[in-house]
Image 1 (cartoon, rainbow, N blue to C red):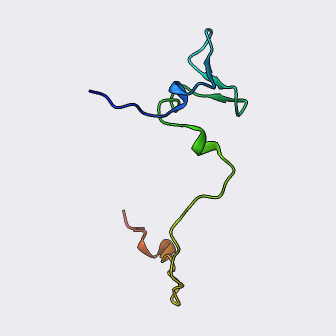
Image 2 (cartoon, helix red, strand yellow):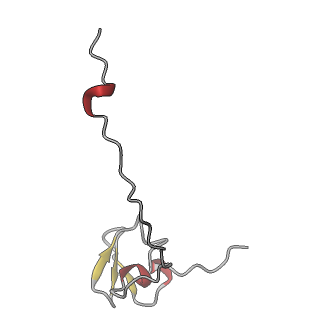
Length: 76
């Protein structure tokens, strides 16, 4: 049995266009592309700050190595 999943397709504020596969959000007044309507929902569009875990201060800063052209092979 499939569980109920909250998404734009199941939202009461979503309206499907008859002329296209895209939908329209009556609440946010934005077009919802059919490719993302199955998993996107208002939480994705909210302007509230995300609730993320607090990271510890790390003294060492990680730096991406840049080898430039040193790894390129010029011999044919």
